[in-house]
Image: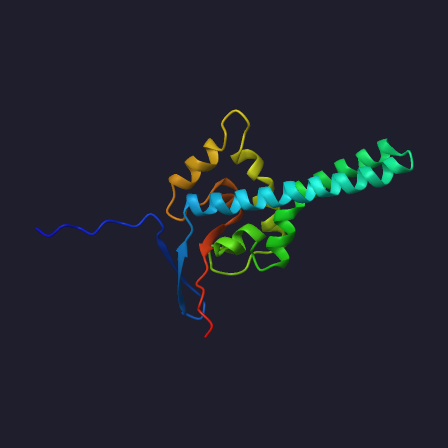
Length: 169
């Protein structure tokens, strides 16, 4: 009896449109998604630190340190909670980290995601990364389904795929 070929970790998903056109997407695995998330996190931390330095220097010079610190906290909040949803909504399903890693967020039907899906999937990241479990829920969710969807993706009907890039000559 011949040996069965082994399945790859990053599998493909076939999506058939209502017009009966089939698209095949390669689903992004947890490692590639993790690197993209770390790139996005480092970028957010860099911008928050730079903004904190500039704002606190500006407002500290005129004696309004407290106002500068409050403004910095508002900027931190907006950056940490709205960076992902805004970019995924208006940059065709990609954050900077996803773009760098060649990833894109789509619906499970292969359509671009809309704003509500982007916001909900990013808000549910807080469930995936519970402090005591250190992303254990997110890793377990991605490991137990064929599309490597974390809890936010499962709730919103989205998936992260590897974008095919063609070389320009």
